[in-house]
Image (cartoon, rainbow, N blue to C red):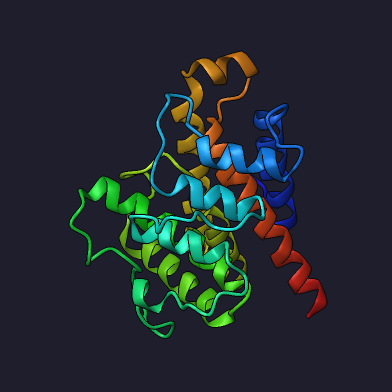
Length: 227
C-alpha cells in the first residue's frame, strides 16, 4: 500500500479520474446539472449528494436547506464566506468523540455512514477555520478506537482524514482504517455493471468522494510544504 500522503494523493486521484473519465463537467452550468441530478450506479440519490458535489465542484450550496446534519455540513463547506458556524450541528470545536453518533436515531449502518460523511465535510470547513480541522481529526481518532470501518459503510468518506491522522500521529491503525474504507468501496463496486465495463471496481459515487479526498490531501501536502 502507499506509504506517504503524496503517494496516496496520486493513487486516489488516478482511481477517481479513471472511473470518472468522460463524466467530468466542462463548465459551471454542466457542474450544476451534475450536482443537482446525480444518481449512483443503482439510480439512488441521497440527501447529501447535491451539497457534497456542489462543494466539491466549487458551486454555491443548494437553495433549500438540506434535511440531514451531514448534508447541512456540506452546505456550509460550500459557502466559503459564510458567517454560520457548524457548532449548532456538531457542538463545540473543542469537543472530543464522534460528531453525530450518540445523537442519532437512525439505524447504526446509516448513522455510521453519516458520521464519516460529517467528518469529511467538517474537514472541508476546517481548511478555512483550523479549529474545525482539529475537531474532524478528533472524531476520526474516535472512529479508529471505537468503530469498525467495515461495519456499516461501503463509501470511503473521510479517507483522507484517517491518512492525515496516520501521518501526524504515526498511527498505523488510522492508516489501516483508510485502507479498509478504500477496499470496501472497491469490493462494493466489483460486481456492478459500471465496474465491469470500465475494468475498475470503483462505483461512481465513491469515485467522486475519493476525488474530493485526493484534492484535500493535495491541499494538506501544500500546507505542510509551506510550513
